[in-house]
Amino acid sequence: MMQHYKDLVSDALTRVKEIMPWDLGRRLAAGDTPVLLDVREAAEFLMLHIPGSINVPRGVLEQSCEWDYDETVPLLAGARDQQIVVICRSGYRSALAADTLMRMGYTDVVSLKTGVRGWNDDEQPLIDASGQPVDADTGDELLASRVQAAQRKPQVV
Image 1 (cartoon, rainbow, N blue to C red):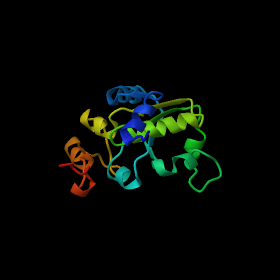
Image 2 (cartoon, rainbow, N blue to C red):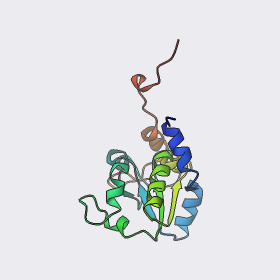
Image 3 (tube, rainbow, N blue to C red):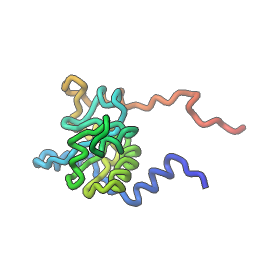
Image 4 (cartoon, rainbow, N blue to C red):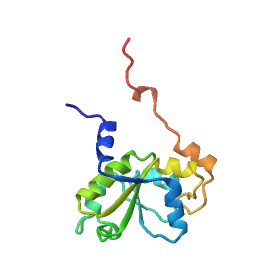
C-alpha cells in the first residue's frame, strides 16, 4: 500500500514525543539548554529562527549526525545522550527527523509540535539571519503557505 506524506508523519508520531511551543519556551526561560535542531532548508532558517538553534537541513541530517563526513556537525554528532528538540515550520518534517534521530541512537529527542509557526503564534522570540528580532506579524508573513496553483492536487470533475 502506498503511503502519502501525512501517513509517514502519522507513523513517525507513533514513536516520537512532541513538545508544545509554550512548554519549550518555559523550559528555555528556566535555563534548560537542549540542542535546538532546526531541520528546515537554509533559506527558511535565514529568514527567521528560534534564537540559539542550529540549522541542519533534513536532507543532510544523517550525515550531519555521524563523524567523518563533509556534512558532520560536531555539536550534533556528539549529542546522542543530550536533549534534542527538533524544529521545522509546522511540525511534520521535525517529526520525521526526530524519528530518524531515534533510529540512529539518539536517546532524548522530541519534536516541536506546530513548529516555528506555533512558536510564532505563541509570540515566542524569533530572529533573522543578522540576529535581529522578528515580530509576530512579520513572522506570520514569512511563514505563510506559498503553495502555487500547479502544486495543488488536480480536481476530478
